[in-house]
Structures are given as structure tokens and as C-alpha cells.
Image (cartoon, rainbow, N blue to C red; front, side):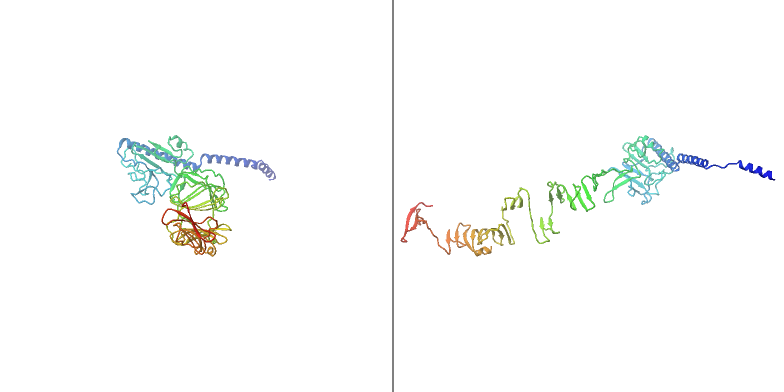
Length: 499
């Protein structure tokens, strides 16, 4: 028995186990083989290729069937001009109804073109009421019992068909998804590198691709452009805050508008706006002015403008909430600062500055219903008054010591040219007149209403130069005489030439 146990131990010691290195090598080989098998037999790619094979077979069958109909049934209806028929069912439709596929995000079509979708109840019918408008039901050569649709038939994958009755050309499109079939998108000879195109005119359908689209919409949610290649190109930002805007229906730029997010400021024509709205250039406001060019860095406004008020009733209404109610024009250059009021291009009031300070009145208003009074000073010694008391117009120069030089215009009591002095200087409406020339050429001294060519009130008329006197014209002839007085107080006359 002892010898038998020894032999068993010898036999068992001859069996060796796998080392760790050997196990790792085997596992690595298996992983490599598995990866190779998965790569070759990619199940996702296999499914894609299977669906593409069905698409290619469907379009080939339809292509041959339509060619047969054109050759043997030339009068059969094959579709409307500029209509693109889509294999997607419109869920909002009932049987027998069609739509323009507006419920789908389809690529935009050129003007004059439209899509057509049918209901899910009619989608595969072969009698002309399906998604294809062709009646295949009685065709002997090609038995199409139901219309083919894309294996996925969703917004990314569907069939398209269009027919041109003017030249009897047609086109059918599909989107392929497998890598194996991508070469067919180029080899088909069509005008799109993203679609498989077949038919007698493979440039008939005016789109470049379907599915996987980026859609641009306007504020009304209308589709402006549909990019089916999955890429949209915009201009590179020139600086931070640049605002993109459309320069065409499918082109974006942004070289002229900037937003400062930190301060909430918008700049037009300037990248560093200093105000809530900063504009570098002219601004036009108003429906009629919007198309007009404003002066360089200027402003033109069609309607009323309010400063300090939200209800301007005049072309310019100023309401200073601080109580100043001032309108101020200042210029630091040598250019004359002017403020003008005109009517029919004729100046009514012009205020000049920069070395030509003053007011020019060119024309008086024809109607006034309220009193206007304005006083301003050129210096501490001279004040100007311009006012209207409801009847008369006045222009006064008022001196510091109370004298007034007045020009008035009306048929009332203050018509003409007057000089006032004394207490009257403190009241512009009730002065005491010391000298006046009225509109009839009569001179009054000490009176504002002379009744003769020269009337002196409350004073004498003195001729202090010997030999001088008063020249009178004869009442009964054309001779003139100088009236003088001698040292004894006797009046003398001597003939002189009449003035």
C-alpha cells in the first residue's frame, strides 16, 4: 500500500497549471478577436445598410414603374408642376384630404413650389390617393400593391417625388444612412451630395437635403431657412458683445451692433457704448423720415419731440422738472451759434452768438392772442425788453438809470419811436414819454401824442446862438423869413431861402 501512494504522488506532480502570463495572453487574443468581429459585424451599421438596401430597392422599383407608365400610358396623371410629394403622413388629416405639410419642419422651397402630404389612412394607397399621386393599381408589368415608404419614415428619413408636366421629367429622392452606401450620393449624378437621386431629371427637386436640419425662424415662428447639412455659418465676431443680424434670408453678419452686458448698453456703429443707447452716425425717426439720410452725426425727427415731458404738443416741448425751463445753445468753437424760427423759409426770429450776440426780427406774427414779455441783458447798464400787451408790439432798450428807448408798432398810443426817462422806466406799460416821433412824422417833446409837427409841453424852446431864429414861410406866398429878436425885445424878420 505504501508503494502505491508514492506512485500516485509522482503521477500528480507531472500535471502543471496555466501561469498568469499565459492567461493574460489568451484573454488578450480573445479580446482582439472579439473586437475584430464586432468591427466587421457592427450591428448598428448592419441595420443601417439593411434599411439603405430597402430604400435603393424601393426607388428602383418606382423608377422602373414610372418609366413604364410614361412609355405605355402617356396620358396618365403623374403629378402637378412644382409640387414636391412627401411620404410623411399628416396626422391632422382625414382620409381624402391633403396638406402642404406645414406640420413638419421640412426644408424651405423656392417661391412658387409647395409640398403635399396625405393622411395616414391614405399614405400607402396605390390608386393615386396615396403619397404618390400615380395610379399603379391597374399596371400589368409592375405589381405595386402598396406604395413603399422609407423604412424609418420620420422627419429625418422620408421619400420625395416631383414631376414636371412640361417636359415629362420626374425625380425621386431618399436619404441614405449607412457608411457603405455614401458613395452612391455622389455617383448618382444629382445636384445634392446629401441625397440619393433617381429619375429622368435628377435636378428637379429644389432642395439639397432632408433631415438633421437646423431651422431659422422669424418672430412669427415662420421658417426662414432650413439647413439640412447640420451646419450653419455665421460671421466671426469682431469683438465681444457683437450682435448678429440677418443680411439675407440665410446669411448672418454682425459688424455694426454691439451689446455691453455689464452695463446694459447698446451701441450702433460703436463697440463701446457710453450710454444706454449710443449711435455713431445720423439717426432718422418717423415713418416718412426712416428712409431719409440724416446729417452726419445728426438727428431728424418727423413728429413732436418732448424734453422732460411724455406728451409733447409742439414740435419741441421743453418741461424742466427742476423748474429751470431753459433752452440753451452753447458753442466753444468760433462758429456762430444760431437759434432760428422761420415760416415758409422766411425767418421770424434769429438769435446769434459768438461775437454777434443779438436778436434779428425779420417778420411779425399776423395774429397774437396772449401777452408776451421777455427781458434780457447784454450788460449791467443795458437791458432789452421785447413784449406784446395784446394790442401793441414793443422793442425797448432800458438803461440802468431809468431811461427807455422804445420802438412800437400799432395804431394805439405807443406807435413810433419814443424816449422815456424818470419814473416811467420802472413800468414798461405805463411810461412817461419825453420824446416821441409818431408814424405821421409829428414830434412831441414832453408829450406822447403831439398834435403838430413839433409840440413842446411843460417847457420852453430856446435859440441861444445870435443870428439864429425861427424860419417861417409866408402864409400868402412862397417867401421865407427868419424871425429873430434884438436886445430890446423887438421882433425882426429878414428874408432867407426856404429850407
